[in-house]
Amino acid sequence: MRVVSLVPSITEALATLPEVALVGATDWCTHPADLDARGVARVRGTKNPDVAAIVALGPDLVVANKEENRELDVRRLREQGVRVEVTDIATVPDAVAAYRHLLGLLDAHEPAWLAEAERLWCGPLPPVTTRVAVPIWRDPWMVVGGDTFTSDLCRRLGWENVFADADRYPRVEIAEIEKRRPDVVLLPDEPYVFTADDGPEAFGVPTALVSGRLLTWYGPSLVDAASMAELVRENWTLSGETSPDNVQFPRISGETGPRT
Image (cartoon, rainbow, N blue to C red):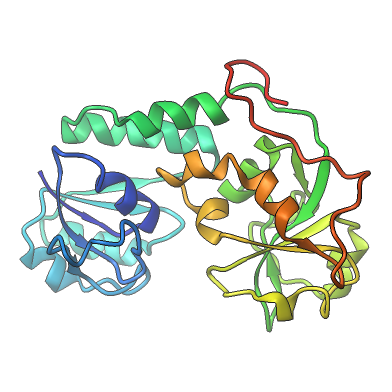
């Protein structure tokens, strides 16, 4: 089947399926790195896709996401007779279920990474060991709130999102982040590219630079995201200090059942 993906995470996942001819993707689709070499056409961004270009590709299916893409663009594509599947993913189990649904639509076999992601992430929730805040933008500062994939992923790592009671992506002041008393502020490199200059100089609590792909994408990256706890420990910094001994970082167990 000829497929256009308007979601970076889903683009990476579809690229692993030999039964799928991925013919189009957004400019934000960076994985796998050889998309251009494969001849995958770029159809602009997630919020402003080139509808005419997508239609010209003659896709059997366009895959979109409720959060990533605009209802207006989905409607315009459907008015052109294009079949569009809109995913709605707010948790890790949602992602697994969405891919299984897509596999059925595409008559494709389940890739090994999907079963591994389910094994790693979809068991009982571990105990909370660390309180985190996750900014996604600055000037104005915005953080990950509740009812989001990233907040759910953090909880499944044993991390409590201190803004889980807030709207999905609220605007906040630095003082409010500090007031919530996170053990660590996680600074991803997307959508805003946070650097070390945004860390100890801006906050009075420890910070850690992390991969936005591992923290916010739902696809093959979920397998690598299981190492997030160790990566945070390695990148934890507060004016050059390492992580305090009283904060524990959980590991995702390789066994089924509860994770510790």
